[in-house]
Image 1: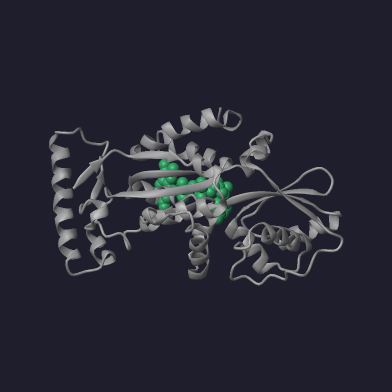
Image 2 (image 1 turned 180 degrees about the vertical axis):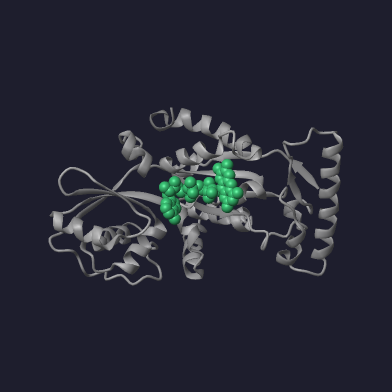
Length: 311
Ligand SMILES: Cc1cc2nc3c(=O)[nH]c(=O)nc-3n(C[C@H](O)[C@H](O)[C@H](O)COP(=O)(O)OP(=O)(O)OC[C@H]3O[C@@H](n4cnc5c(N)ncnc54)[C@H](O)[C@@H]3O)c2cc1C
């Protein structure tokens, strides 16, 4: 058995990657199959996730579009549809700023294919990325009349938005390596997208997990104390039973004996406004101490990255 401290990583490196690359990286956390990533694997992975309906993986790539409509009527048409999980701002004139995940844009097309701004955005996305709407009907011939102009807004431009737009449109992902009690609480934050290491698929008796179960060191007990020794003994016994069950059972059956202290990986992806809400709740004295253990330093990190929102 292995005992490790909790940690987090801000996945800012992924912000510089293409949508399929970041989607694949995040998606493979579920299966702990990051070793299968190569130069060609990202787009087939995205297509497979879409085909299998593992749609939350497609939430791990977010992009922002500028949509220049010709009239207020077209803007009204979009708002009447109310496409879900898109963040929309009306700028000067008939110009829109629209941010959403690959999944949100795909479902926008699926449910509102006749809305003119939707057709314009879908046409643009399809021209840029031929994998984007795999499995979703798209009328490639049709163009809105009069034409609505769509262009991508780079992340560097998003980062220069004034605070109210920045906190709404700027998304950032964080990977937590924590115990399952902490992830159980984090996943209550509904506006976020999540992907989590799956105990159904991961067999901790495999070599790649070191043939052992990893637990997160609890902050409640001092190492060497009576309480810590009791906890350690419980984890040792649990691991023994889990490995014994794996000799005849699937991981999803064997995991029923695993405790809250079990290490897991969770990717949380949301905009800065939601991160601020999370920090407000999860760093307060009322929050669970193991949650504060990671959220307080993470909030400090965000203060340095985005002072306009978190200072
Ligand atoms: C100290 C503490 C103790 C807790 N104890 C318990 C407990 O004992 N049992 C338990 O079940 N949970 C408990 N929770 C979880 C808590 O009730 C919330 O589910 C969790 O903190 C998510 O936060 P949220 O609901 O404010 O917002 P989020 O889910 O993060 O959503 C962000 C914002 O979106 C809006 N929003 C999202 N979804 C909706 C919706 N469906 N309707 C309206 N507005 C919405 C709201 O404005 C909300 O503020 C606890 C949380 C804390 C911090």
